[in-house]
Length: 312
Ligand SMILES: Cc1cc2nc3c(=O)[nH]c(=O)nc-3n(C[C@H](O)[C@H](O)[C@H](O)COP(=O)(O)O)c2cc1C
Image (tube, rainbow, N blue to C red):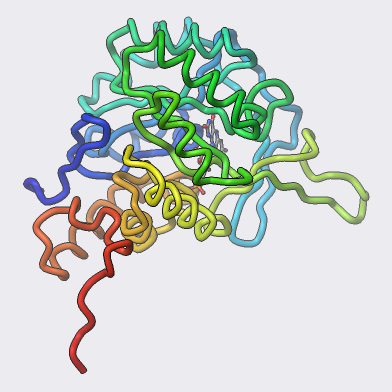
């Protein structure tokens, strides 16, 4: 593929701009039977918490028109098992690994981020301050600007790795939030997490999800995510990983034109595990058709007036 697709975000070199999103690819064991993880631009892990976490009561998934509601609730085996078993395996593919860090208190975030940093096996951290599915921590941090700033600054102080902060689209003022995150020391932003949502079974007059509320993902949220990336690109100079409803290479290109330096494929992995690499190929074909030498030329292109209009 040569250098056409090569890119970097926050100093992290990638062979192409396509990543897999946190929590939608497990920690890769099953997916590695469908595609070679070493061909991805990078891998973002499932959220890791300090202690093992059982997650929420079932049912945890509900399909909606053009989307999916989930309330997994940060289920994972905890930091120790992750460091011993998962991270060394993931690092073995030779592509950058973003470890997604979550917590139920500031101290937990700081401890997990610090231990991941010292392991030397991760390329970056993605701080999940926007999970809608936990009562303590999670989304609370990104709904309050002051809490988010304090948390990011504390993690920044301890963790040496590039720090990406993952935000919710449910933020009163996306631009102000992005500026505040950059000011607190974020090296990059991941946009967006799922959109808080719910569904009710009318025959039972009860919520569909055991947790009552969940997060909406998939094509239904794609335009919401494009706007978030667009606004972030206008307000800060740090790189953005764009995610939310990417369902084909066209959506990935759109996200890059809105300002994303890299993109994450999420819910689509459940439907079509080979999709991330086909998206890579689609981006490459698009670049050739448009006569562009590098994918980096597309980043934020829609902010700069786009391609010249064809003479009619
Ligand atoms: C089943 C499921 C589990 C997820 N788990 C996590 C998680 O552990 N941590 C996190 O930061 N985001 C998590 N997400 C959010 C995704 O990483 C992504 O931000 C979101 O789904 C939007 O992208 P998509 O529409 O392409 O799925 C999860 C999403 C889904 C659907």
